[in-house]
Length: 525
Image (cartoon, rainbow, N blue to C red):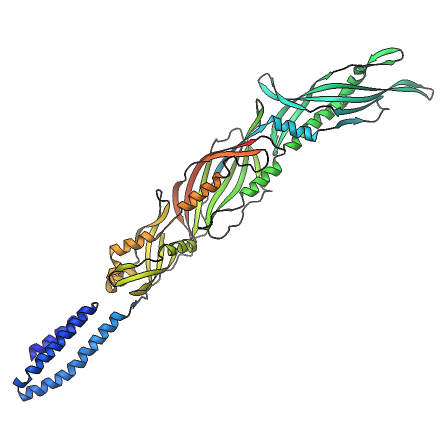
């Protein structure tokens, strides 16, 4: 009888200890009832007094055993509900982050032929008109007779622009005298042709290609004469003194035409404004590239054979932003043009890849879709991921459904994998409160194997963003023509990771790129 009672209590204790296995419960329950049958067979051999005591004990123990079994079975059929302490995010850190500047070199080549074409368009027809005869006895009208020719010409060690301007002159010359209030004048009309050669120095001032032009020579292709007071007087003898009158007019006309035809300011400002407008690099990952121009540098213009070369350089900041369309941060009225003696011959781009915690959480939640973690009948699914910053670490909150329901919390350090172009979390582990609970109540979830599987999904790739961004940028470096006659070419090397910085709102990946750009103006209209 005593042995039988001990066996019952041992069975109950074993059931309590092995409550996680339903098969074990069933096996032990059958054994319990076999013992009960054995007890029935031995009842006749016992004393009546002992029999009465046993009957009382039997009816007391059976409800206890059944109650324990029901409690254990009910605990097996219901998933555990988690109620863990949430690590609160750090909200004291500033949203501002360290910015680095980039440099984009823009060598510009302008064909003299384009300057010639633009000058001919702007300087046409009548270029000088003097209709006052009384002041110097001469009226002059000067037309451009044929297209202007522009080429380079060496003067010592200096290369300058030589402009050849064919002229047609129509004039009137008044001769005679006035005596005692009587005017005795007559006029003669004449026509002649000539060629003016002008020499120009070239410079770049306040966004404009400027020239300082002086007449070098005036050659008449014909030299007709008029008969005045019985003498043959060459027309050139009369008109050459007047050259000083229209000389400055022609020089200024040439300078103004070149200045107007090659005023870069509107085009440069419009180009910078377009560059500063954030453009989408990846629709799938909702990533944007934002360039903020800071300063624009320029070297002196240099004449080389049939070209004018100058170097421009843009100092700017670059950001890659994940999420909604970012605002533009550029005021074209505040950009400064700074003259410099020399410019680097390459692009140095420091890009900040900004991933807000909300957007990183969304991407990582997608990583967990359709996956289960665990072994056998103990499994969970991750339905949602949340990220935030605390004490220099990333907190990863995983909402789970399955054998346990609720949220578990992990912590780790964000790192960047240069080969896979992924942001992942190093030293990822459950936070102390979560880990203690799992060891006590769901040790299978705390095992290293399950944790490693979870860690594999706690990452997100920026490789598609970088590759798509590079592809989009290369579209502007492969004979890109923002306007007729302007062509942009260049190269872009692979991006190199620099570091990661955390703020209270986002993960910042600092990435560096390099390359070259060349701008050629050929055939502008």
